[in-house]
Image (cartoon, rainbow, N blue to C red):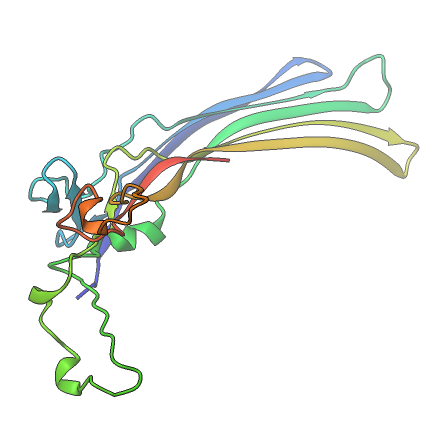
Length: 231
């Protein structure tokens, strides 16, 4: 049964204001703070693979109910300016920058339940030439299943964020025309990625995969989601 009932709390506060330093120069500045707890399954139907214990740990039984440790460092400053140079008629220079945080990626959160005792998948392969699977074989016991590959989270995941900035020039010509040039840039940090936690080492001789993976009691396709990406 892979059903989930997830709960999360989100808090955000900000302060922002405009300052007219001179008649032709205005600054806009502020700061925002956000905190969002990693979603919790209200019945603790979540799991985590501990590399230290080399086993699956259930939420609330050796690991936090929300699995991922909270990230309290989500400060997001914002800044902008607007300048009308006195020596250039009908000309404006403007720019700004800011940091913007993401919220939880629920495409990943759904996999917190992906593993025994809550959920497990099994593939049955028959003979394409001679049918050898019958209805009585469609729901076999998982006790004899091959090694499982639980999906897990890095407990030290941090909140992803985007840094954005822009700079622009604008000139009005006559009563009907405006010429404008704008530059905008952004970069993403701590973006979610996946990697195989149980990848086998390369062996040119082709030894069995079970002898080349870090956790041989588990399958070779054990994914972990972590915030190591950037753009």
